[in-house]
Length: 467
Image 1 (cartoon, helix red, strand yellow):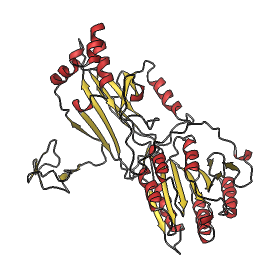
Image 2 (tube, one colour):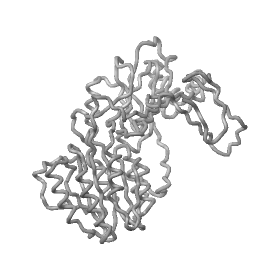
Image 3 (cartoon, helix red, strand yellow):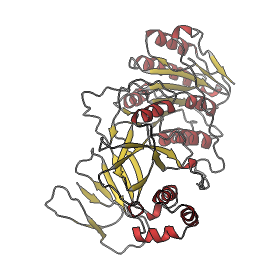
């Protein structure tokens, strides 16, 4: 346990004999010259336990009350209805606007997946292989891909899901939807891989990537994308932005084959989705690099992660959605909450009564990072049903899940909703990304599909052809 700074000389005032410290006062040894940010690294004594940090707002409760009384929405609202419920409702709607004025809490959680509990099972991933079949892949490159894929497919674990997609100017899928890994589906995939050719024209990654993202997420099966390409595309920014917006559910392992592979594309796809990028030089074998990434993708993973905060009834809280739907070894979960004390507006606040705020995975990637909670009268069963029905996945028992939370006897549950649902919310103008500064991504509409039995799938290779 301890603190350090990679950028500045600091002095930390704490009990040197203590194994841990509840508070540490950090000061700069020299005068700050404002030429670079101050970075402080905190090394907790128990790194795999959830840690919560809090930063005070720029206003005290009394100062915020005076600030609030000068706002038009508060003046107009309380003029018609001066009740405590109305004042609390106005504060709740203003939380996204008044974030700097309130205390902010931050959750950091990095679970130790090497010591799994006995009652937790390994989640089997959904492996989707995107193969570049453009003309530039002809010859040695396509043969290297075929040899490596045959080995990788035979190395997958039973009960996982998989699919193979070849792309060029258009794209073709082996199955209409990801299939369960078994002897029959493996044999069909291997026969198709042996017959593929680099005969699909140019290189268009955006179309197959959109199709993959539109497919339903299967609970307990984290989506793992393996992309192999040897060229470059003209819309790299759009591709990176699309995957970035869905990185909470899709992790990409990208492979650049040959000297002409676009490094910005290959590295960018892995970076925005927390995957791994690999490059192959002339004469280098693809198989060892793919096996290395496959081992990381098959590591134990926590899926369908949700976090619950429990606060006194006299507080209003704005929580961020869960940043990822699954945690791999070394991943950390980060969540934020804005806390406002509303006890001055409640006549008889009860300190023993609690409210439960749930941080769930955001289905709206374009919404605000913060979600606000509202009452849900249907209770726990209704919340569980609504959460299961949000995604296009069956309501089956999750083979591997974990929640971080306290106070399981809390009374009512509060369901998160996006700030885009607040009537008077004015979203900030979208800031262009560095990868694609001139375009704004239009999200494709979600489309439900139905899993088909394997026997109903035609044995002809690369059956589905999309223009």
